[in-house]
Image 1: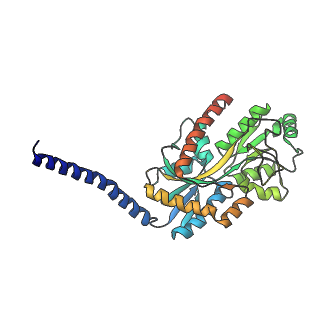
Image 2: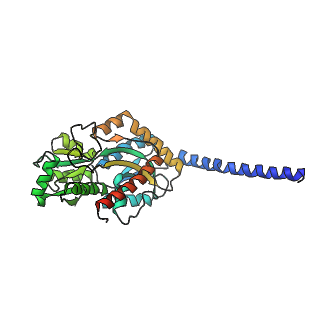
Image 3: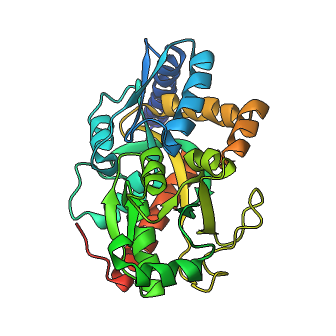
Length: 333
């Protein structure tokens, strides 16, 4: 090969290499521009349940702080319906520009997908996770007017009063928890549907439902007021804020271990730079001392971290709960 041809070949290779290197640099610049100009106007934050529930309260705390940090209004919307499915579909179909955020609890991301044969969204394909905001166990709750003080008394009372034996539920997590409880205790409770945790609590207080496995956010004020009695927690161990409340396993019925969590998600095709900007902002919000203190009063625990790590957690949880539901023979819907 002649010297000229060698030089020409090397020049071509160098030019090609330069072009290859230049592509991500241009993409990175575009992505940074997208993040720098975000948000372009008001941001919508949507929750799939009625006002006053746990995810509503958590979402509103974050929304207020996010509005301060982004310098644009964050408009909070309740789109209750079908156990969170209505809101999830709305956000899955929204423009992928970061202007629409879903407050997505574990019911939306894990339990609805494993309970329903068909959904208008896919938790792994329809969304990009910003981060996990908080996690929390559920608490087996009864009205203080109900003459039971522990789980064994509840089971005896339910068997003696079968027409009163029912449970409150808003979405898949509550249904699965109660179905597991029925299986492990050989009892039968009928499901009574509600639109939010707050409505579930009112249902227990008024006697519409005998029991509820309820997230603590909306529950704690009624517990402190002496209107709701906690019989057990679904956590793997007792929670530090409520050390006197036993786990369901400690009450004599192992196998009912369920943790709730709340993530924030955006449509799947949202530019990664925008997702990462929101991830950074939300992580800083939930570490703020006043937010940590507020969460503590609600008995929920800030988590944070990367969206990718929580996407992996959702995938793991989907596989686990599909197997649990199969083994427990809980019917799909």
